[in-house]
Length: 568
Image 1 (cartoon, rainbow, N blue to C red):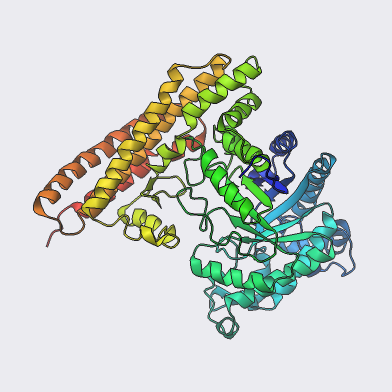
Image 2: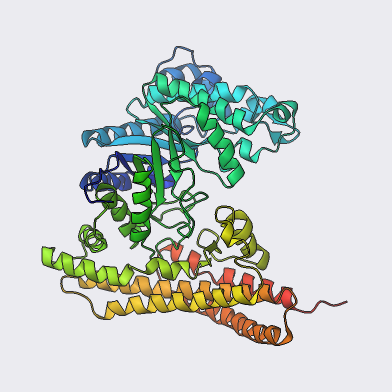
């Protein structure tokens, strides 16, 4: 792709959960957007719409009420009766978000909400008993579609400056979805996932389009079948609805192929989503910079007609942590810069990150060039180190970057929940208990740790212009990362050896593997003791979440119990 290729039309920064309510972080994000020529801020929380509206109609507000305060005037007694801790929250958050939208508009930045539907407050289960049948929530009760339409009418009355809504209807992470349906009523027996998606999307689209805003449907699914059902619903959607796709088909796994839906959404506008922080690749505690991986994916996205990019800076399930806290902030710079210019050199991206982070003194073109080239040596293969420890032959052997806690847990993660073979059939059997797979996985650990150590050697030869404090910070990051990667390498070695021994093997191979496993189990105990001692330091809590002695010991004990001879 040539340097003259057009920039993507939408280039958005995505914030999650608690950071949505952190005004200082919002201001910092808006500053970044303005500095980097991005176009939009996406605020993600699964229930973000439900945090702004009651909706008032169901608590006695007049049908013609035009604002949240008119609705509150009509329904304050009922709200206090049914939702006393929630009655004032919507109007407080409405005022806060109006300010965010106003500040964004001053610099020409759009603000979008992103959520997962269906979502609702639990009081509706009391107000509408028919929504629960046989102990399960029913996603096909007609009430839900009226409810959804009502809450989006109210949302855009309260926040008319919003550009639109991005929603994921195909994930079980909402409160209610056809994807995770457990209801067995007649309505559900007669319904199809495709029909449910169509009804839900239509109920959202009507009020959003009436407000002159845009709806974007996320292709966020956990299986190929769910993706196909949602894709079929796309075909019947109004033409103005855009589609947002994760860059890989299942989640943000850098070892996975491109999402096969890219370029296959008809004439619709397409957005592509990326994770900067690293939910599945180390949270930045072990840096994993994906510049060259993203460069290739963005080139292919341009060729497929993608016109929007979304870069996630944090994760809703991880409080108080963000790409802004770690070297993975370089990923956000990469997204912004490659979104404008596909030929942007990696060294220039690293230099921009370092300069904006205040790591250079003085900030001159000469120092930028030297520090950018040095950072490329330091971090250019950081994903290889992470991919060779948290993953095994491309398969996801981590639980959102944390250690698996047992034998069955690990292989469920790698082969069921996060199955690479679903999307790349050549990976079927990649982790089978064979001599070939065992050798490949063990070698991969050794090579990954060697890559990390070779890169860390650059810390002993820093460039001029790099502030001492910045160098000290990077040294701390790499020292922590090495502990973490060693922990994962030790865990995956033990797991793979245990799996190899879980089936009959030739006598000599079994004897050698058992000896190596005993050494690996002893290593897990040593690592756990090291992690326990490290807890005496004073770092961000997420560091200790990843360097968890408890998780290592739980895994160790499970493997020992599994391998011990059982009494007759």
